[in-house]
Amino acid sequence: MELGIALAVAVALMTNLASLLKHRGCQAATPVRLARPLQSIRGLASSPWFAAGWGLAALAWLVHIAALSMAPISLVQAVLAGGAVTLAVMSQRIFGHRVERRQWLALLIGGIGLILLVLTIPNFSGSHSEFSLAAILSFEGGLVLLAIGLALGHRAERLAQRRGVLLASLAGLLFALAGVAIKALTGAGADSIMLIAPLVAMTIVCGLLAQYVAVAALQLGGAIETIGLMGLVANAAQIVGGVLVFGDPLSPSPLGITLQITAFAMVCLSALLMPGTPKWRTPVPRLA
Image (cartoon, rainbow, N blue to C red; front, side, top):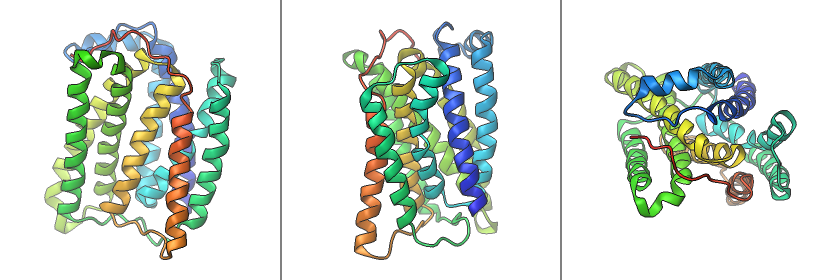
């Protein structure tokens, strides 16, 4: 399990850097449209920045799968959530983005929250990949309904000024749907053999849609606020999925549970503070 946690740390760093590279590359690209995937792909592929970011993201995805196969999903995603504190550092030092004072405060809060979360997690044994059919269908179905609601909200004209926020949240949910499906695949045994094909299909479809939606969100907003919001939604949903679907244990004592809730709230607060003052652009990119 220790190797899985180490891989999760690497995934956090690789994912943040890949997202920053993709943000730089997609700024000058033609707005993505789901109805014209080939045209959108050609426009994005023409940017060396985006191509490098996509390649690094693909590598991070493979490492993420390895981490999920070795450690509980809630622990892996907690590490990824805590890794968001490196986003501001890389954004400023490597890409020259301005980082606000409240975003630096988020670094301290997120770091303390992650340490507290790690200290209060009970001893795990195994990767915690077992699940019941009812649990995964209920959880993934709930995420699908939320994703549909965000997609419909994205098309509503009265929410046009919030389109960047909705797209970033939708991308996070789609990444979470794929992540939970991947975790289930690592634990699919003989009694769940019939679920392998649907889980693979869920992973592929949600993964591809998440990439398109993420690019649309990156084209609308600044790097830190967009990447931070996507990471917050994706990690929070998968941490909850670890408990509800895969039975990841909570602390056995009331004090431990209180500290875990506090730690998780601190990590979420860190991600919420990280965006700073919203800088969403005029909502031009549309998915369809």
